[in-house]
Length: 358
Ligand code: F0G
Image 1: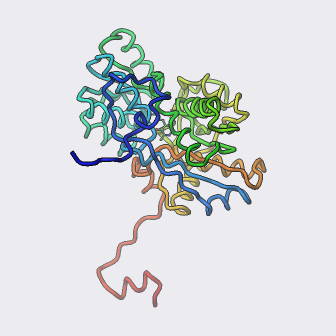
Image 2: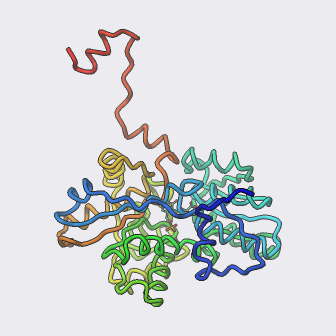
Image 3: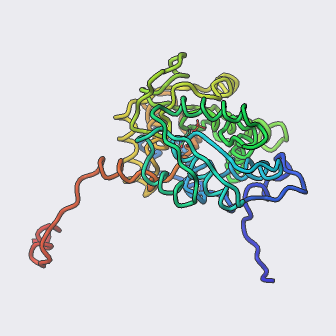
């Protein structure tokens, strides 16, 4: 045996807070322990005198925060003895479900809206051996479908969308990590809202740490939806959601009530951000701090810029922005929103010209 001591994943780290029994076989890829990166250059753009941190969830094993929930959901699915897991997804849940099912040695079925899944996410799902089922419809319809099939065959399949309470339990550990790192909660926590599981999970995590006396004060939770897919901000279902941020192209979130509770209990807000502002923040983040997040994640920064511009921030406010997924998930949007690469012949003179050295 080697003396192997390393981060063992969120269940090992936060077991006392999670619904896992000693007899459960833990399915983990050592998710969690993601970097909390201080971003002073961005802070200066957002508002004077604030402190800003990026919680880089794209550093999880499959490149998104979904892994925190999936380790718990798949661990419990094995304990229940199901043959397979199933989910609807805008991409990241399917990538994570596929990887954790592979790890567990069970099948994964993923139901996705055809043509609306970023390339990286689809390639993950197929590489990990998931059965990918595309529908001519959107995420909301896909979720309806998998909920119905779970109801019809309850003992055969585990549904691993965030309607599964184990997903929320795992995801709340990101709030624990932030408090453990800062020694307090931030004043504002900003994050994207799609199906609204993650904002629900963060609020649960902060409240649990508060109740346990680990943090004296709770943060305000600020959730951001894409303007073309903003049911909670608008207060009504959006039947045909549209946005460049395909991860959060959702018109009828399953955890709508959880998101409203997080907003209202924390004194926060859920607001809509245009695609133009999402893409501007997407580029600004990558260019200003060297952190590459997918478009849906960049909405956290777009939201921070909006908060700053509207004069709602005070010097010394501490902000944490969750960057939910890695930028490499969606190479097409990256290329489409950047300047095209130059092409030159392999000649020194031409290179020197391009470098403006002569
Ligand atoms: N950011 C990214 C990168 C996501 O993939 C998602 C959701 C969210 C934010 C929103 O989180 O749904 O908990 O409010 N993606 C789901 C999926 C819907 O299928 O991958 P939420």
